[in-house]
Image 1 (cartoon, one colour):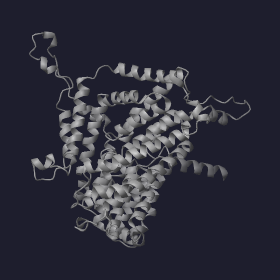
Image 2 (spheres, rainbow, N blue to C red):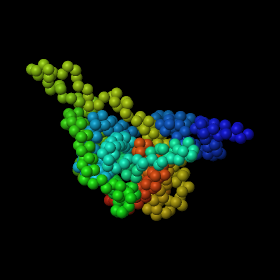
Image 3 (cartoon, rainbow, N blue to C red):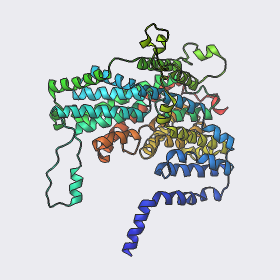
Length: 553
C-alpha cells in the first residue's frame, strides 16, 4: 500500500498539469450549468483562463487563445468580434514599440548609453549601484522590462567579477568547511555558492529598476498597454490614454519609487545609515576600488569604439519616435496629427512611421560613394537596412501579442455578456466606500495577485471589473483602473513573480527568502508612493474629480 501511494504521488507530481487541464474545466461547470445566462458562460471562461494563467498549466499565450474557441461556441461573442480583439490599435503600438526596442538592442546603442551613464555617476559601490539602477530604469521605460534586465545583468556580473579579481570585494561568501560525517544532501546544499549581500543588492536592484521603470512610459510594460486597450475599448468616447499625459503623471511616480527603493535596498544590503554595521564595512573599497571599477568601465567603452552611423541613425529615429508620441496630441499646442487630418490618429501610427524608416534607411551610408572616382570606395553590394525582418522574427516576443489580445477579448466579452456589470453589482456595498479606499483595496488586491501570476494576466482579469465598478460607484474610471494597472507591475517578492526577477536571481543564486524580504519592502514603498502621489497629481492631469458624461455613452 505504501509503495502504491508513493507511485501515485510521484505520478501526480509529474503529470499534475495534464490532470489540472482536464479536471479544472469540469469542476467549473456548475458556474453556468444551473443558470445558463451569457454572463455566467463568460464567467466560466474567465475563471478557466485565470486558473490556467495562475498555474501555467498551458503556456500563457496558448491560454490566451481560449476565447477564440469558447466564446463563439458558447454563444458569448461572434468569431469576427473575438478575432478583432487580437489586433487592436494597442497591439500595433506594442509591436511598433518592440521593433524600435529591437533596433536599439541590435546596434548595441543601449549598452553604450549604459556604460557612459555609469562612468559619469561614479564607481564607489553605492554610486555604482545607483548608476546601474538609473540606467536600467531609463532603458526600461522604452524597451520591455525583461530585455532591460537581460541587457544589464551581464554588465553587473562583469563589473563584480573584475572587482573580485582585483581583490576588492567578494561576489560570493567563502564556503563553510564541511564535516565529513554530514549527509551527502546537506553537503551539496552547503556547497552551493551563496551570494554576499552586496552582490544581491546589485542584481536584485537591477530587476526592480526594470519593473519600476516600465511604469514610466506607456510602452514600457505590457500591463500599461493592457490598461490602455481595455480602457479605450470600454470607454470608446473617452479622450483615451495620451502618451504625454502618462509621462507627466508616471515619471514623477517612477522617480520617487525608484530612489526610495535604492535607499531601502542599500540600507538592507549595504549598511546605509548603519556606518558601524558589518555590511557597511564590507563595501569600504577605498579610492583604489573606485579606480579599478572606473578603469573597467572605461575599457568596455573603448572596446566599443567610436559611435557608428548605424547607432547614430537608430538614436535619431528613437528620438523621433518619442517626439511623434509626445506631440501627437500634447494639449497645450495643436498636435501634428490634427494638422494633417481630422481622422483620429493614435500612437500606433507614430510608432509604425519609425518602424518603416528602420527598414528603409541603410545601416551604412556607402551609397554616397557609388560614383566615386576611387574604385575601392565604390560599394560592391547594397548595405542592409538598420533592421532586418530576420532579426525581428528572432527577437519579437510574439506570445505577448496573444496575451494582450486574449485580455482584450475577455474585456469585450465581459462587457457584451454583462458579466462585469453583474460582478460590479454584487460588489455594490464595496462601491459605497469613499473612492480613495476603493482604489486602495483594488490596488492591494492587484499587488497581491501579481506576486504569484503573470502581470498582464492579472490586469486582464481585474481591470474589466474595475471599469464596471467605476460606473456603479460614479467614479472616474481612470481613478480606479490606472493605479490597479500600475500595481500589476509591483511584482517584487518572488523569482516567479516576473521574468526580470528570475533573470536577476539565477546568476547570483539568490534565494526566494532573501528576495521576499527585500521585495516586501519595495512593494510597501511603491504602494505608499502611489497612494500619496496619484490622488494629488492624477486629478490635475486627467480631471479625475468628476464623473465624465462619456462613461455612460
